[in-house]
Image (cartoon, rainbow, N blue to C red; front, side, top):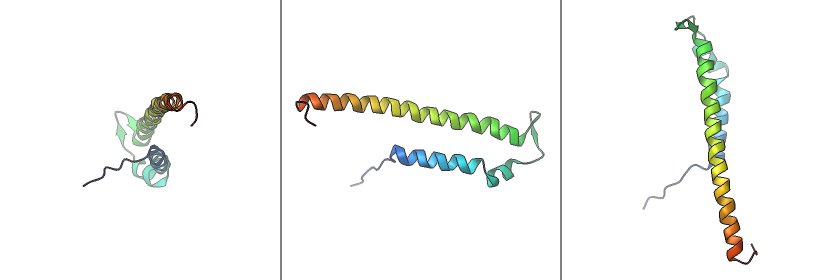
Length: 88
């Protein structure tokens, strides 16, 4: 019998944070620091112009998920309090 284990959201935040730090440090910057133009834009600049909005979008998705999840939990907690007579 397989047990499905989901990655807790806090762990996912840490993973995305570390990935963001790695993406703006030496190894990745060195990879994209080439004398190459893509549509007339230097590759390094293009890397930042694409990577930055993607990281902002991921943060947005996390915050939307957390907002919906916390609203759902607060409704469940208030319903649980009503069922247990406010003790709990």
